[in-house]
Length: 499
Ligand SMILES: [Zn+2]
Image 1 (cartoon, protein in one colour):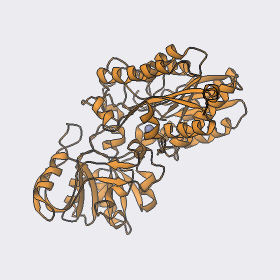
Image 2 (cartoon, protein in one colour):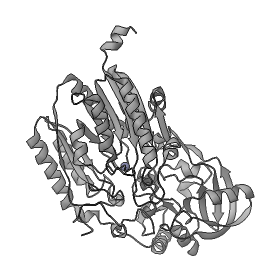
Image 3 (cartoon, helix red, strand yellow):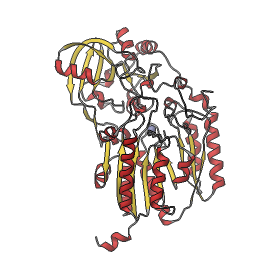
Image 4 (spheres, helix red, strand yellow):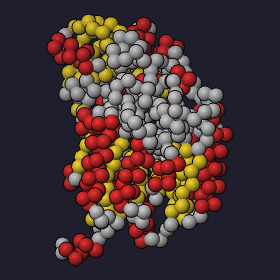
């Protein structure tokens, strides 16, 4: 390729920092949490993420189609967890800034952010990131930001970006498609065929993670109406944000961002309408639960399995420990035959590995990391199998899997069989996003009477196709749907359902 043709191609910088921050968690998120998950700079960003089904993967693929000169900066993603340390945040930010500065001049900037990231001393990390990028690229250069729909969005972020768009699905199976769309919107901005004018509205409402599925109320109704509005010529895109209730900020909660083509009145009217529609549906957001003992009893009474026992208070995807053992205790107390549960417990894995396959062991499992997730349960059982904890996902558009580049690494694992209950012990907490998680070690999901999943919604893509039904449980955990348990300090009040 000649220098001339290279210089005539649009120069598009690309990068991202993604973290869903649970500010009530005691353990902070550091650089090692990003490095252990997904941390790529420069050309390595393209190599690592191009084949993924992530949002940035979609951006990269469409940029290649468009013949853009992509200028990779930094891409960092960590599993949900506690507040990001100031040191980690500054390190990631300065890497992104430094590489963006070195890429100047650029014709556009594509960013993949989460929307619910909180760093020590920075409650609005995404706005801060975009403000710093804006300071480098200038007012006239378009910045398009793809968000996770669990982001808590401030008016400042809406002002700073040219276009904000977000996943439309939860479970997030359209991250890649939205990445393609983000790049398509960038192409229109480069041609200057549209003038984006956004409007933002926020209902005085909090949604627990359990109520943020997009296929059911209250979000399904909002998405249905948003799709009608998005079909209008004058509307560029609509982000229906569910928010993340466990990040305590002044703008926590759902929000609507409607970006029109130079029609601020229309954008404002549509944002207000969708926000009001969501607020009207608020009673549908109140979750219903059974105690673990009642849930297990109900599951045992069913003719057909597997019944999915949803331990959404210990929602790993929301940043919890993944070691809550209340459901395990309930299954053992009722002599369940063929029940399955995954517990993150490195200490227990180590005991099983030392004992070896076929050994009989007595040990305490779960409930060890903090005081939010119940007590350890002492069990005696047989080590049925040991594994390195690596598996390929069976669900193709698996957003969490894209964090790992296709292969999921759970650390060392052990299958411990206690009476009729199959416990998969993992070194690393891993959300229940794929049946291969159980299958890789020999536990057959389809043969279980009941399976405990530590997830609010993300389990559905993998588990509902084989499930007889799902039952929500009320257990201890940092992602409890009972939001009154959390000591909010920054949240704007009054807000439903707290006040
Ligand atoms: Zn999300």
